[in-house]
Image (cartoon, rainbow, N blue to C red; front, side, top):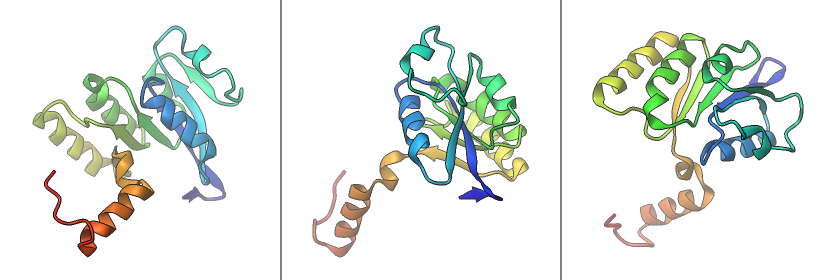
Amino acid sequence: MYLMDRPLRFGVAGAGYFGKNYIRILQDMPGAKLAALADSSPDFEKKFPTLPPTVKRFTDADALISDPDTDCIVIATPAISHSALIAAALRAGKHTLVEKPMAMNMREAEEILGAVEKSGRTFMVGHQYLYHDHVRHLKSEIEKGVVGRPRY
């Protein structure tokens, strides 16, 4: 997906277990550009020595979210921070993808729903295997009855 004549510019909040995968994927995804990263760990710069110097680095997710050079935010931080970061990203007018779990409780989930509806932006929860070619093929085989009835 392109925004006018340019790729969508992504910022990734959290450079840990899941964040590093988004960082890698966004560098090679057509129509997307890794524009910025935020991570609070003191050595996060050392984890990505080959990143181009054009990728902005922040030590604070709020600074990333307020960066005018990003269109979309990927939130891959500890789950306890998801709700507040989602709300901030949507208020800032950013399309937002968050890693699981989206919320810690139903109250947070309802607040997120309200923020999404108010923002008019795209919001997604990361279910990477949902879009994986092998999983799609397996789903197709199950639907055709080739595999049999799944139990779990």
